Image (cartoon, rainbow, N blue to C red; front, side):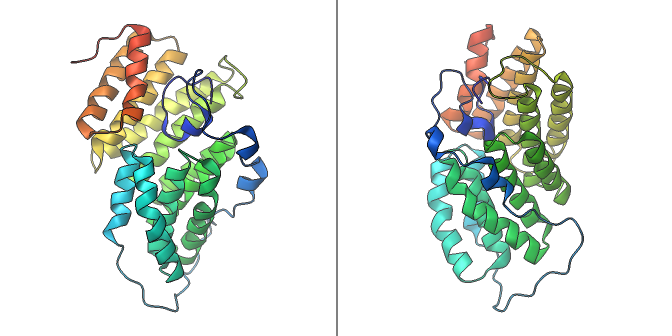
Length: 284
């Protein structure tokens, strides 16, 4: 989204900064109908479908792919997960292929949006088959990314809420609240053509979502990578609410968390850019 001057995770394909160019041409971007046609995970409890082949433990590359995604190493995540996803899908590994597909779709959403459509759809199908909470969470995260890429903020928020509810005490649950907050920042402006906050109540809701993410992140894994995103988002909210001291407080905290986590320069660019713009002093 052109109005956001920070590198909020799932909004990156829409050009967060006003001077950034989109990674795809307008003709390449999927239409809202493409994402809307993706089947949603049903909320009514169902019995899992028993696979007709033996199911193996999750390969460690899935967790590594998720880790690379959280560090902002999106191309590395894609290169790691693409062959793994294809193999797991071909061998009918329901849970593992669903997780791999979801994280792969999330990584694709940062580079070439439409490439995430197929693995996102498969993740939803595997969530429905397995009724596994973690698969549901990751699948809904990916589905929300597809919706958010089409600026369907309301539907994206619903998907991220479903993801957070499916596995609330997990990395996926924390990330779901972060992405829900980002979609709320988007909807606060009404549309990407607007430079004015039209729905200020959405900024308040975004802060609540970031707080929920922080509670999980501080008690679980990937703490610094997740908290860097939380603090960066809070810096953005402070900016749009006219709270300059809050911008510096949160931008500095985000920079410190990101530096400790060892994230990509792309992610560090967000808090550093805000600090430069608003005269915040970052640690050397």
